[in-house]
Length: 435
Image (cartoon, rainbow, N blue to C red):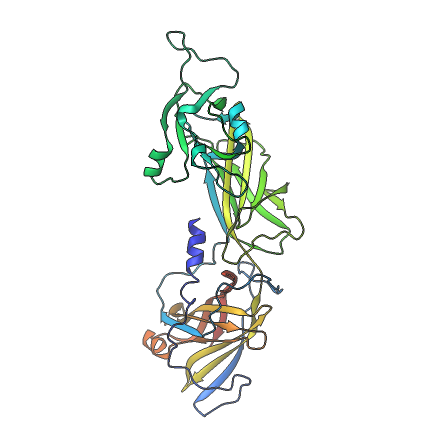
């Protein structure tokens, strides 16, 4: 999740109105006519996006309500650092040494078969309080009511020929709550005598038959870790989700079970297929990846396999942002000069949905060695409509002059975001060059 958290933070800078730079000049934005002799408009064309850029030529409408409805124009210009700008990360990887499953009270009373791939595995059981069950606090399971036995029913004997306990230690719900886990769960650690294999867990307390419980098996030191790499943003109109899976210490071909979990927690099983070196999850027609622009959805994957005779179960998931390509920056850009100094750029957008859009970029100059160096970063945001789709991207002549850099100037890291749906729509590493 860290990359998604960082991805979300970039939208906060211009989500609310900021002070507008006072250097804006009056101009007739509908044409290139000079308003007075000191103000000149130059029309340029953006570079063609490369394969490494993020770009879509098609536009799509969204039926979800905007989450940022501020109408005011906001602009922010700052001196650029020497930090390099890289194409935004489009995928993230999650790794798991555990698995979990939802079970019923009836199943727990009868006994649940589970697998471990190491000794000292930790098992946690928690009641699930939601609209599908009437569980209450009294349905919390005490670890004293849990019995763990080998699945093969060959009871492990101790030195006195008595059954050995496979439970090394327990933690009840009160102790876990003190540690900050407030879901009324209980936990136990299996002993060294519980070798890798299959076991049976049974709850002796009478539980509500239809009650739902989360059973979580954590194997912190297991060599078998499942990694899932998937996109951090997925178009609402996609018909497949591409992802990669890797189970460490294993060359086995996996048979994953994949679920789409939307921002409301609803799970939908997905059909999967192996395509060359990656997996494809096929999305049903008319499925909603998300029900709200503020929410994140998840891809959840379960595997159940064997590695050198050792049973391995894992669950891994990763979050993504569902979006639509609601706008794009057109090729034509106007650069506005006053007294031969660049003041701002006028960008035109093609828009499918009215909403609040943000554009940011890095303005660079050329040093005496002919190398490009950043001078300033600029950001602007405003509420735009198909009939009012021009955005002013401010520059700062004082910063440009103080940099000591000269033409040719370039515009790099040109990025378009839709603040109405908290989504990045495009990114162009090298966008414009002018004198």
